[in-house]
Length: 217
Image (cartoon, rainbow, N blue to C red; front, side, top):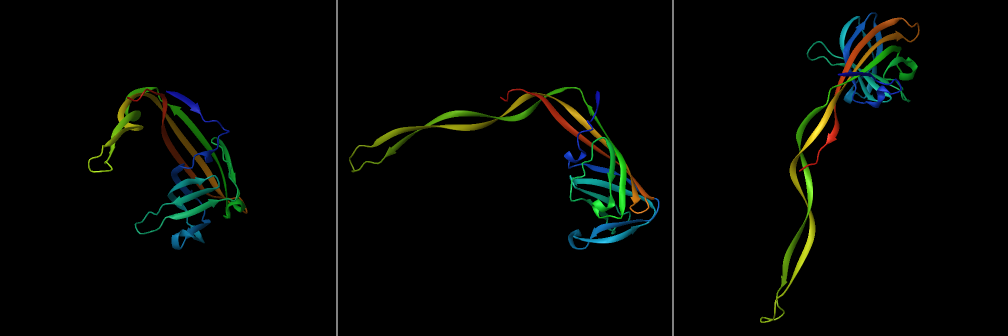
């Protein structure tokens, strides 16, 4: 198995399906603005008490994340904290992260580090189902009724090419790419920079990369 480090120039934001699962450890009471109300369209201030919370950080797009604190008790709602900016965050796949509270309309800054590791498997070979097409010529005899009861019948042959799909199989070679992302970050009071909470989370992706396609037949 080969081990590769993702290039620092690549942005974490290039993968919108990233969802870092982990924990938020609140050391001092954390004040944040959360979504609420009908369809989570309203914003209100919430005070998060010290403790450890099962949390996730989801990348919605290049300028919007959602920090979710999952409820421990049945019937309680998750706390959804938007981390949204008018401009892209431009966070690298490997490196430091700094997001100011005034950038995301939150009373806290975010300071952390993200590390992305990519590993690849060896080449695997197999057959898989596929569909192939053939152009086939079809002809029909077209006859018109006689103009009079005893008149001749006129017939012509009309042909056309029709594309027909058939099921088949093909030989393929492929390998897997495994991507692991690890984020550690501190949530700091935007005014005095005191550490209010720390977040750590991990995301895993598995992609099948095709190296060779055989002929489908």
